[in-house]
Structure formats: C-alpha cells, structure tokens
Image (cartoon, rainbow, N blue to C red; front, side, top):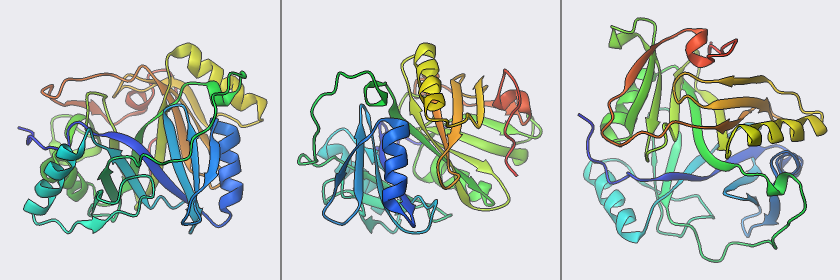
Amino acid sequence: MPIQSPIWPAQLDHLRLNSDDPSMLADFYATAFGYRSASLADGTCLLQGPGRRIVVGAGQPGERPYHGYRLRDRGQLEDVRNFLQGLGLNTEPSPSVIFEDDAVAVRDPDGWLSVFGLPRMDLPSHPVDNTRSAVSLSGRLQHVVVATDNLEQMMAFYEDTLGYVASDYCAADVDDADTRKVAFYRSDPEHHSFAVFSASEVRCDHHAYEVDDWNAVRDWADHMASLNIKLWWGPGRHGPGNNLFFMIKDLHGHQVEISAELEVMPREMAPRVWPLEERSLNLWGPGWIRD
C-alpha cells in the first residue's frame, strides 16, 4: 500500500544541465526546443518557453545536477519539509535559482538531487511571440529519467521513503518482483514524472516534454528536420504510459523526448508489470534496452 506522501501533487518544474561550453548548449536548446534565454545572477542561463524551463551552467558535460519539482503552495512545502526531516533524511539547501530560498532538497541513493519548492515571482519574462516557430509550439517539461546499477535501493527510496506512486514496472519475469528492471513513478496523476532503469552504471537517461497531440509530435519532428537534427528513436508508442514519442540527442549525447498522450492515472490505481522486451518499450518498432 503506497504511503500518503505530502509530495503529491508535484510537477517537474525545471532541471539544470551542465556543459563545458554552456553558451553552446544553451544556444542548442534555445533553437531546438523553442527557448528564450536570460542570464541569471549566479552566471547560469535560464531558458524559458511555453510551459518549460531549464537552467544551463558550467560543469561536466552531460551532468544534470538537480531536478526541481513545483509544489502547490507554501503549506505543502512545509508539509514536505517536515515529512522529509521526520524520516531522518539529510535535507540540503536548495541550489535552484528558480525557486524561492526556502525550497528543500534531498538526495537519493545514487546522488541525484530532488528540489521541492515554489517558483520565484521575479523571474525574467519575455514578450509574447506569435511568429510560427518552436517558441510557439506546445511542450511542457514533464518527466525526467535516470539509469542505475542500484535499482533495488532506488526503488525503495522513491516508493517507500518519498512516497512516489508506482505506475508500471518492467521485469524479466512478470511473476517475480526480484527481476524488475524498470520502475515508473508518478507524483501527480500523469503516468510518470520520474523513472529509473537498471543499467551498468549510474547516469542520466533522458528528460521529456509533453505536447498537445499527435499533430504536435509531427510539428516538432518537422522542426527538428528543418534544423537537420535526426530522430534518434521513434516515432513510436511506449507500452508503459501509452504515450507517443520520439527522441533526439543533444550536443553532449543526452537523450531528449517529445511525448504526447501520456496516460493519466488516479493516485489509488495499482501498478502493472510489463515483460522486459522491445515491444513493451515501443509497441510500434525497435525498443531501447538499456545496457
């Protein structure tokens, strides 16, 4: 039985990506994903678009230092803080310049930092742009995924400690919980805001933008084609989540997904188990089995 965590509901608000050439990476995301850029006081770059924002800063190429989850209000934030500290977890100061200073952060067993907070009210803004371009395309930042060589502890942390709700698992043997290789977790009714795949090492896997419909997937694919950015995987439809998708790679090889029709599940809906096979990961064609 899932615990009734005060983290529900929480939505992925932003994340940070690092690069040894932050300007180059920021320019790539601005062009490819319809972002407007603004410099922040700490020297990082804030990229914003309709329903989406990320922070790009200096660091190891491909690093993703934190994931920022937006809560409803300050009451929920204090409930989350008390919940985390009541569990004896080591909460950390927030590194996010997007959230208010009272945001709270916690690390999982692999070192990924989740920040829970409320957006600042003085973030840079941009004028509305009605020109047909990527800036006007739908694409809400929606989920983030990691790979791990420590799946059992990661599942225990997100499911049994933080209280994220399991939506689906993929397993080598659907009747044996010890053979699970993938776990999808939701922190609001959308199928997953976080997922973790078993792999040979700890690393970033991908982050995703949720778009309006199949036509929007097409429009994003056409936009990528206009930039000579090849689709790396897809188009297809995932089994878990039932969402349409394609993926590209950014300049550091980080996978980025465009998704539509992601399944919506009430909090009380029990998780399902899929066989770990290509068809589960892509009902239409080749699957990406992590190493």
